[in-house]
Image 1 (cartoon, rainbow, N blue to C red):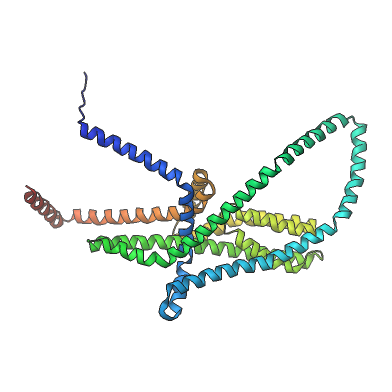
Image 2 (cartoon, rainbow, N blue to C red; image 1 turned 120 degrees about the vertical axis):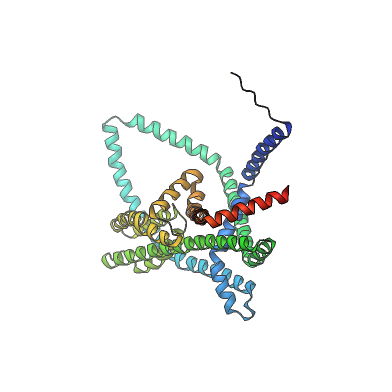
Amino acid sequence: MKVRIEIDTKTFVRFWLVVIGFILAGWMIFSAREALFIIGTALFISLALSHPVRKLASLLPGKSRVGGTALAFVSLVLVLGAVVWFVIPPVVQQSAKFAESLPALSDQASKQWVGLAEFIDQNGFRPQVDETLENIKQQSSTWAADIGKNIISGVGSFASFIVALFLVLVLAFLMLIEGPSWMDRIWKIYSDKSKMRHHKSLVEKIYGVVTGYISGQLTVSGIGALMAGLCVFILSLISPNIDGNLAMPTILITFVLTLIPMFGSTVAGVLVGLLLLLNDPVFGIVYGIYFIVYQQIENNFISPAIQAKKVELSALVILISVTIGIYVAGLVGGVIAIPIAGTIKVFIDDYLERRQVVKKDDDKPVAKLVKKLTAAAKSDKTA
């Protein structure tokens, strides 16, 4: 038995127009991914600063939002300057101290190398060692030949980063200033006031999720920074080789870098560990052990518990969303996974609430009759 399906030309054309439209939209999004990333980063920063800007604007004469935004950005620059001021001098000091100890380390290495050379000759490993050293020399020559290209590429990447950072800051500044007026224009488009109030409530809930995630991340970073600084301070009391002044740079380095999800805390731990290794290798290893243990506690208990309260998600959902985000979109996916999960939860809760209301109305016979009469009246008017 053959079944013949007839499709008119209009439906066929509409179908392929929709398919082509989706393909073109996907291609445009992929082509503009860098610009969208810059805009998204600026939006994230503007949401993070929106609450402080609102507070500052309410305290200024005339409640100037421009003034509040300017003060917030100036405060941000001052905080970054303070980080540089407190972090760079100790790092330079410890590097100089390490440079002073290099001659002694070189002498020790030379003595050990003599013994190693004798061991190699006695056991007949000299041909293999010579071949390995020759390969290293060839690789070094190749790298040296390409060093000019590497430098140019590095300068270009740094210039691109500076331009992108400038665009992000400018866009965030303009979003903070013009954001409320744009939202007012959008709400005025609605002719249905009840729908406008409903959508406005959804936007406010999503805004609460995003800002709650940001404040939660700041809280987690603050706890980690204080614990790291306390660990370094305790080690300075035990070891005479560790300066207690390293506690403040440790706090600032850890706080700033742990704001970067996934790998920021690792970079902070490695950097602080290297600073301690330059002073006392044993206690540098002790700090490394502390860092590994604390990271397990933070990742499995502290961070999920705090973020669960801020974005109203369970610890399991947070861990699942971050895992999916990392495997789907890498670092960026890990950054935005929790706010996206919170936003999806807002829409799901809203859908379930509306379904419950519809179900309750359908269970009432009078409401059901009114709906039928209304539908019948509309059909008569249409006829």
